[in-house]
Length: 192
Image 1 (tube, rainbow, N blue to C red):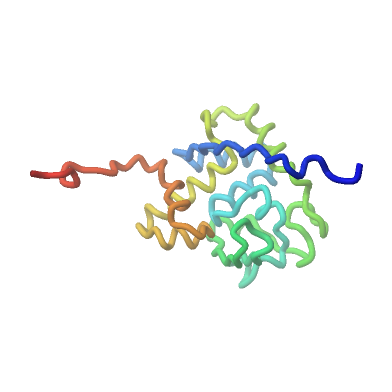
Image 2 (image 1 turned 45 degrees about the vertical axis):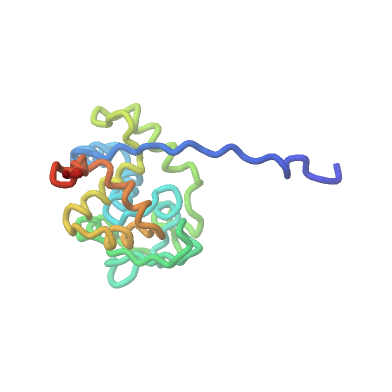
């Protein structure tokens, strides 16, 4: 063949998945902690630092942490938004970070990260083990739950947008759908 016959074929657009936030993050995290320590640390980083689990968390090296493990610094080529991202590491998470050789991945203890399906596989195994997961709750639900917690604590959409690394406020707003706050009140309705 001289040319690729698939060049003109458009790929199928993937359907968006609704990640249901956790009502009791602590309970689920304790169950995950008993199941697997790598998955537990991944969930803590996803919830506490709002990092995306399948790339940003999986590819973390000790050199990505600075200031005594108090923040994560990701360059634009290491995250979905394409912009540099600096995220504080909460105190509850720092107790599980021990530091290491800057060139080593935090999960594999080698220069290369675990394979791209590592956390997907662990999560699939955990789902069959779990007695606390509800339908629609995924590994990304920790990111959604963290976003809701930030908004509840700060009330600021711009802080949420920056913490999530979103270029658009509309994307950040989709993470708040789990708040179940009445959007309209009687005072908002038209009057005559």
